[in-house]
Amino acid sequence: MNGGHRSIGEVLSLLSAEHPDLTISKIRFLESQGLIAPQRTPSGYRKFFEIDIDRLNWILVQQRDHFLPLKEIKRRLVAGEVPPSALRSAAGGGEAPAGTPSLFAASHDTESGEAGSEDAGDAAPSAEDTVTLTAGELARAVGTDADHIYELQRLGLIAPASGSGGHGTEAVFDQEALLAARTVAALAEHGIAARNLRMFKVAADREAGVYEQLLGPLMARGATARLRSELGQVVELTETLHRLLLRRLLRPHLD
Image 1 (cartoon, rainbow, N blue to C red):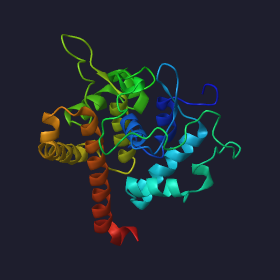
Image 2 (cartoon, rainbow, N blue to C red):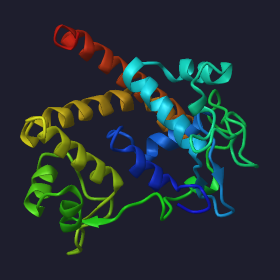
Image 3 (tube, rainbow, N blue to C red):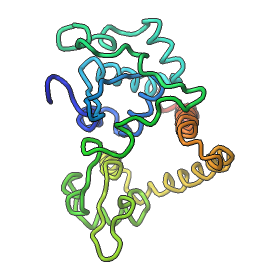
C-alpha cells in the first residue's frame, strides 16, 4: 500500500474473498457509471483510498444481497442514504484525502457514452491491472496442480490470455483466469466438481451470442465507448435477473 492508497489490482485482491466474481473490468465499469471515482496518478493509474474501497464494497453488497440495480444504488449514494462507512474512511471516520474528487465529478456521459471513456488508464492494460501466470504458476496460486488447470481449460472454464501459446510459446493466463480458477476451487469445497460447471460455459456462450445479435447495429458502427457502456449495463441487468430467478426457484431451501 503506497501513501495510504491501493492500486486497482490490490483492491481486487482485497475484495475477491468476499466477492469472488469481482473483476478489474467490473471495477472499471462501476467507475464509468460514476459510482466510484478514484484519483489518478500522472501516468493514469488509479489510486483507491479507504473511502473508495468502502464505497465499492457497499455497492457490491447491494448488488449481491439486495439485487439493487445500479441506478437505484446511484440514487441512494446521491441522496446520502448509505452507511457512513460508504462515504468516509473506515480508518478514522475522516473525510477523503484532500484532492479526492467528488463521487460524481468523474462521471462519464452514460447516455451518449462518448465523453471521457478513453482515459490514460484504460488506453492499454497497465502493469497494476494485469496478472501473467503460466499453467504451473496458476496451479500454485490456486492450490492445485497443472493437470487440474489443463482440465479447466479443456472444459472451457478458463482460457489462455489472447495471443499466448502460439508458435511453440508457453500459454499464460490472466487475472480473470485466476479468479475463475479460484471460484471453481471454492465451489469444489461445496462438493461441486469442475466437470459439473460446463453448463455455465455453455450458458455464457449463448448469452454472448444474444448480446452480439441485439447490439449488432451498435457494433457495426464501431461506437466503442457507447458500446462498452450499453453492453456493461445489459450484462449487469441480466445478471440481476438471473440471480432473482434463481433465488425464486430455490426460495423453499433458502427461507
